Image (cartoon, rainbow, N blue to C red):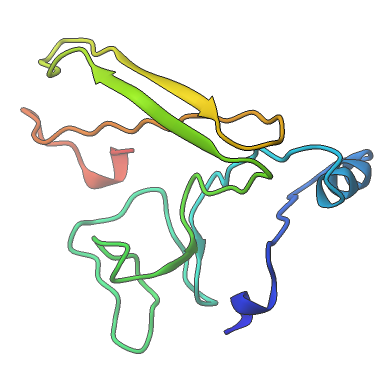
Length: 143
């Protein structure tokens, strides 16, 4: 597989006039990258991952051209939010204040510790979803 030939992939999008310097500094270890992918990167050419999908959408065998209800059905090379760093971060003391009832709020707290030898920054990703809803919303409007 091609992914076994490289230790990492730099995805710089539109780096601007000083992007070459920033990319070089990251590759040579002068700075610690902390970026995350803003989308899911497909494993196979021709697969397009929209920001929403129908639960009934499935991959067709031998032709991964549709987004599935489960990412296991349509494998991705790198999932949304994936990123590498020259250090490692550990999470501990995770607490959630309560179960959310509509309307409501929830407080989530945790301790993030740099467990590596290099200085770095880290963004904690937190996702929530509704298990049910009172009104039916068209799937195209859900994010």
